[in-house]
Length: 147
Length: 147
Length: 84
Length: 84
Image 1 (cartoon, helix red, strand yellow):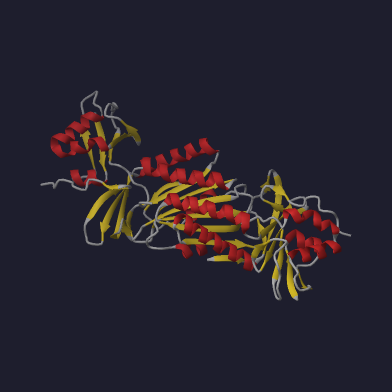
Image 2 (tube, one colour):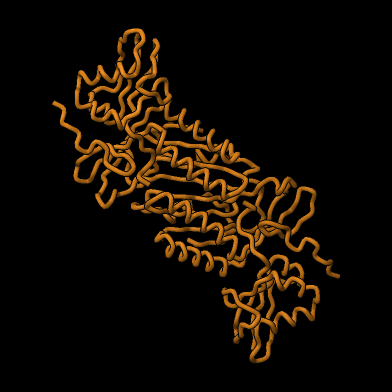
């Protein structure tokens, strides 16, 4: 399951998608909306995606994991739209026979998701300002005003 | 939350226990009952614990994680009694500001849990035989018959 | 030939539209589109070096050739999940 | 003095009981208990080297001294979760 959704992510979707009687280890990752970024209070977040490409790239990540670890049970879901503090923006589940591989593969999936899956985040600060951000820096912070 | 339980583990218990508005990453691990061990079909498992000591040792693991990573939101729950194929035997949740630490800490928690938390597993094979096992080898396989 | 061009996030805001159809000459590449956008809004060129492009849901380069019906997108640096 | 001794998993099966009270002489250590169990069932000594002991929910050694009311347990090698 590789999906962009506007609905609340519970985790059950990805967990059920990877469940298998021969996989003893399930590693799940949830990204949730924090109440601050580097100490600056956040009001809420808005996510935007390019859904068909995002889902295709998620599938490619799963193929990479299949090649690297022989793990075939990977699911990813990312929510778009307005998300409040504490809500889940992204969930990744990996089921594997052994836990070490599962942890590695789940972490790899998240790293790759950040790199290649076209999803963008707009941070709306508590003080009312807003900006499109990328993981480690504010992107286009000083965007020239359009006239 | 550090708990030995006879109830079904849903994952919600540990997830809610670690939820925090300033923790953007939640890593969860579930151990589930596999339908086989090294190819030999399993009928079901039985877990036994020494509850007060097990819960104390889980707390100690959380303290170790707090010292190593500065992560203070860790929860662990382990089920005892008869567990059927696919059911969750153990769940660990770690919430952290950054996902890399969360993955490391959750994996560490599981490794330590296997080492120091007094919980035992009895594997009941599909062919009707049963034995107490440890992670990597059958323990006391050739136990002398008691007369 | 006619292609669809999609703009996301900051590109969407800059250009004030999320999608448009473009009529391009035969032999056009992704660069043909970038140049046309630059004519409309010169400041966008500053961001080209940190931006990626896609053609039919696959990352592409400026030199990727286009054909009738292609779906092209401007992809600002991506972020999945939270800053975690 | 009186202590409680607990047996889990394979120890429980071997000794056919999960818990008992033991009356021990003053100055008794964990080893005093191990020797007494060995008298009852000599084969158990084979497993002592792979087994751990606890006193009041804390891992202990053979030389740990006991006091009135202590809770001692024989801890076979542990396994948490599944073999994963």
